[in-house]
Amino acid sequence: MYIKVTNQNQYMATDPKKNQEHEDYILKDNKKTKFGATFIIIVLILLAIVVVASGFYMEWWEF
Image (cartoon, rainbow, N blue to C red; front, side, top):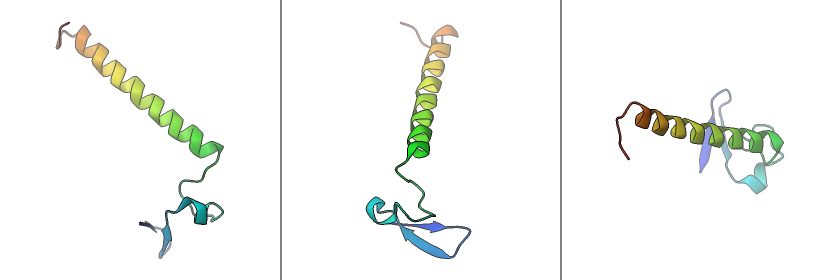
């Protein structure tokens, strides 16, 4: 699988072992990537909980 880098006309592989040190690698295995992924997952879970809670509050669904 390859991802096209839009600001450069080159392709790079998504293989983590080969590209961890590459400057343009998108999903590096570092603290920023782990924090970002965790933050996004938590926000999505919270949004789902809020949608369900608002559905019960507005009586769109019943127990």
